[in-house]
Image 1 (cartoon, rainbow over the protein chains, first blue to last red):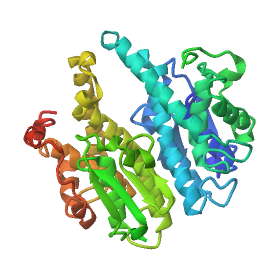
Image 2 (image 1 turned 90 degrees about the vertical axis):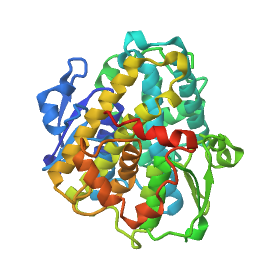
Image 3 (image 1 turned 30 degrees about the vertical axis):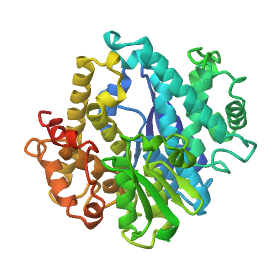
Amino acid sequence: MAKLMSLLWGAGSPPCWRVMITLEEKKLQGYKRKLLSFEKGEHKSQEVLEVNPRGQLPAFKHGDIILNESCATCLYLENQFKSQGIRLIPDSAEDQAATYQRMMEGLALTDKLNSVIYYDCSVPEEERHDSAVKRNKEALTAELKLWEGYLENVAAGSYLAGAFSLADVIVFPSIACAFRFGLSVGRYPKLAKYYSLLKNRASIKTTWPPHWVASPQGYDILKDL
Amino acid sequence: MAKAMTLLWATGSCPCWRVMIALEEKSLQGYNQKLLSFDKMEHKSQEVLDINPRGQIPTFKHGDNVINESYAACFYLESQFKTQGTKLIPDGPAEQALVYQRMFEGLTFYEKLTAVIYYEWYVPEGERHESALKRNKEALVTELKLWESYLQKLGSGSYLAGPSFTLADVVVFPTVGALFGFGLSPERYTKLGEYYNLLKERPSVKASWPPHWSENPKDQDTLKDTLKDI
């Protein structure tokens, strides 16, 4: 099954990481993959554009089936391989509601992180404003505090929607990025606990961004949040 | 079942419309609902904050289950009520993949639309730039051409992910509805125009059509020109 799958990915990209965690959790190791460089603009190469006209990663193929949205890919893998590996979407109404809710909220978290971390990349110089940077940081702080609240009772086996689920697959990579970019462990103890509990989970450890392993020291953009 | 459900919504909100279409498609008419006003800041009222700390709508409750993200509510409804109403997510791998793919591209589509039509709502006066609005419009045009090409490939009379109506249409049609509500030219975007004409007659879409695209009667006329030149 996995032999028919291929993934074009970039290091440190939460969307790519989500798909890789899912493939591990669904016991689909052995898929073909190719690491591309955002810095060298390889996400805009012909190879990617042929799979994804948007020139974005991840770009995933299963036989002739193409999926270029990380959440779409994760949902597809969970549904098509429901009976193998870990169940990532629970059946009970209550747990399912929580899983879908946190999963989709996770996209707001990623957006708010990007708006701070990649401000200079996405906003041309003449359009930048200190007031915008300040507002983006305040929005991110409010967002992080929400997640800190969601994880009030975090413990082994008790994550965003109870047992490990698609919500954690989607959200964990962004939490890991936040700490990579300097988020204070002291100021966000629940997020820090969530991070330390899950970073040793097999699917997450195996797919940890290689350059983060090579140079554990990150950045400090978020240290004052 | 529907009696145990409550939706807080506002007119002209695509996310709210998505959930309302889904409820109709799953034969869950009769749910409790309350129309709120963005203009009166009712989305930041205690009533909403008690259900959704983000102060956003839609907010949806089914018994004690609270879901405040439109896509999450749609997935939940399809999964919990799989055997009633329209089947919104096909089982076959290729069909299913395309539904999920278009659904999530639909989030990008909606973002590019709102970056233009809500530019002044999102960006404080001192931070606005002609160059930014211009860039947002160009990005929307690129996005529109992509969706035109998706519909072109599938052929006349098709839905977004093939010959049948699916969850992709539930979550993306509201964006298309808004595009034409704000003046998009069906002569310039013929495939989207055909798609719009096809879907606007669907009972679930008709039943949930927003009373207005803008609450403000003053704006209701002028907003029809917003996208006419793009």
